[in-house]
Image (cartoon, rainbow, N blue to C red):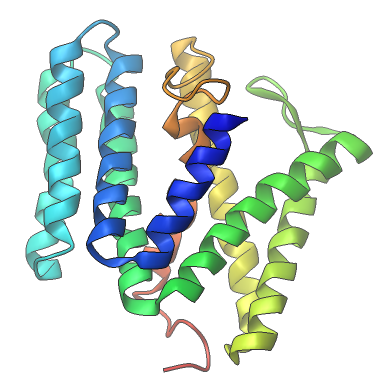
Length: 250
C-alpha cells in the first residue's frame, strides 16, 4: 500500500510540474524497465542490465531536447545495441525496447506539447481501463479473454474497460471542446493499453516469470505497472502523425 501511494504521489508531482522534472522521471522509469527486461531475459547478468538500462534512460532524456529527426535514430539505438549483446530472446528484447523508448518519448511529448490536462487524460484512460475492467470482470465473469496466459481476464472486463475509457473521453470532450471524436480515440487508446498489458503477460509466460522484478514491494516491477501505458502512449504518438489531435482545438 505504501509503495503504491508513493508511486502515485511521485507520478502526480512529475506530471503537474512537467518540464525537466517530468523528463527525468520518465527517463528513470524507462531505464528501470529496460533493467527489468534484461533481467528477465538474462538473469544474473547485472552488467548488461545496468549498462543497457543506463543507455536507454540517457537516450530518452537526450531525445526530448533535440530535433525529432535526430532523436529517432537515437531512440532505436538501444534496441540494436542490446540485440547484439543477447544470446537468446533477441526479438523480444528488441520489440519491447522499441516500445519502451517510444513510449517514454511519447509521454514527454504529450506533456510538453499538450499540457498537463491531456497528460492526465492519457493516464485516466489507462487507469479507467484497468480499474473498471478489473471490477467488472470479477463481478460479471463470463468467457475468458486469453485463458492460457491471463486466466483471470474476461471479455466482460475487457469490454468494460472500453466503456470506462469512453466515459473519460466524454468527460474531457464536454469540458475541453475537443469534440465527440475524443470518445472514439479514448476507446482506441484503451485497446492499445490492453495490447500492451497482453504483450507483457505473454512475454512473462514465455519466460516463466511472475513479475518483471521485485522492485516495488507488493506490486512487482515497473513493467507490471506501466505495461498499459506503454501501449497507450506509443499508439497516441503514432496516431498524432496522421490526425489533428486533440480534435477541435489548436
